[in-house]
Amino acid sequence: MTAASIAGSGAPPPGSTPANWPATTTEVVDLNGLRNIEFGDTEDELTRRGILRTDLDGCGPMLTGHDTVSPVFVEAKLVLLWAGDPMRTPEGITAGSPVDQVWSRYPSITRLPAPQGTHRLDGLLARTGDRAYLFLHDGRTVQKTIAGYADWARRLFDEGAGPC
Image (cartoon, rainbow, N blue to C red):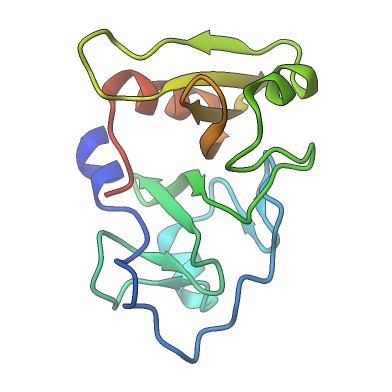
């Protein structure tokens, strides 16, 4: 079920976002979510508020105005956000940030090595209570930031699923 839920979430392919959509207005993703979007919000609630678009071709629903953020829903609740550049954490970590900077900003981080024999990225899990950031990296720089519920971030890393 996890793989199916995660696989059904994500941004559409390039060029499929309507031209009249606003540019990204929020640049910070934190452990609560985004401005006006919180972890635990339901798909129905976000759709009713005009924040979630499900009528576009792509690999899943999109957040209006956040074309570099892919929502992940489990049992119709928002559990994770995959955030691409220019989104950043409040501590300033974004795609392209050096791994050393992640270590300095999140001193209690857990190292998650990718399984041997796979082409997956290593991870760094910065957990605070039931929330966490998962930074996927190539050994030098952050490639992707995932924020949300810590258990779902860890499960996503362990199972190797992505938003598409």
